[in-house]
Length: 220
Image (cartoon, rainbow, N blue to C red; front, side, top):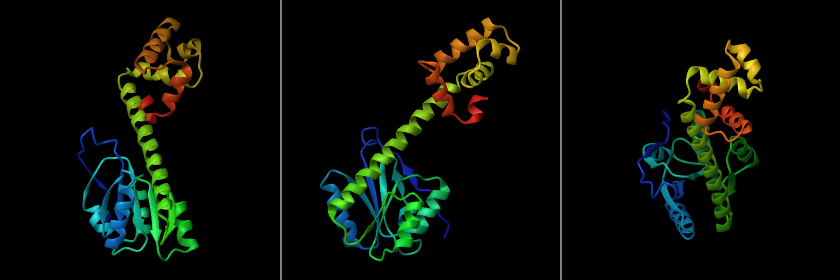
């Protein structure tokens, strides 16, 4: 089957920060049990009986994780992880299985899984794993948001300001930048001031950190 990226549905700002755990298991009782466990600590869930059902739905764009059974109808949980990694989807995954073995768990963890739980597991084991996965996803989203803001700031720079910013980030002094770009030192100082202001950089170290987070095309 052809694997599509997980689709995101629109979500109101009021709900965008609430965590959502997506459970994929062909056992109705397991899905309901996990819903009750997570609901007891205020976490909402969405349940699917197969990976095909999951991939066919538009999902809310919210922090959270996937809780996947390893053995599923059609595409298995491990194969879905491989496909999602190839698509660049970084939603954290917790695996659960009643037939786990060491090679299977090693494969899952090496591919980035947060945890690999063997059924039957204790409620607290799942809650702990979900808490770690959600925190990991929140941190990732925060970093992506910060990088997006920096990219937007860099887009306000003129081509010459981008050149000066790139030179400053490599540690060149104004005199050296002026020589490299064929400008006067006064002009370099003006561009440098504009760069600091437009990039909202509080220091050279802050500017370098922001430059490091940008794609090369955004700097050059």
